[in-house]
Image 1 (tube, rainbow, N blue to C red):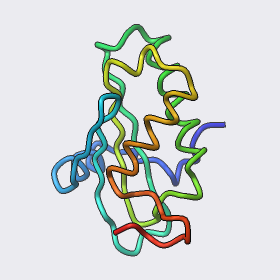
Image 2: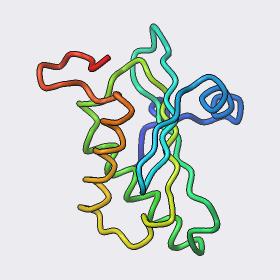
Image 3: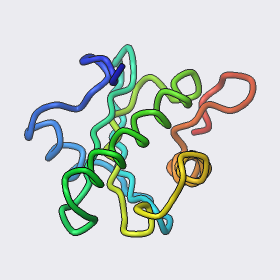
Image 4: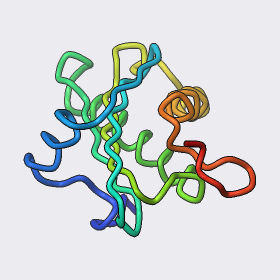
Length: 122
């Protein structure tokens, strides 16, 4: 099952708000834009995979892996953020385990994971 609708950044307007007002963080595999939204009851995620990364089959596999990773970190993500994840070229050759490890690194760089006590990192 994919991400539920309430957990997705859906409209062009929402994406543009995250790009314009949010902060960006990056590692070799991902660029992450994060926009704090006070009062939001749960996080929202948008995914972007460029046509430069491959054909539709490849791009859809990457997006499926990215959604699996987001579900894996579901309980650890802060509630009051909109996140846009952009895949970079090295993602194409990664397994799901490698992708999960790299996404965890990128999310921790962006300070959107809760710490071990359940408190926000920021």
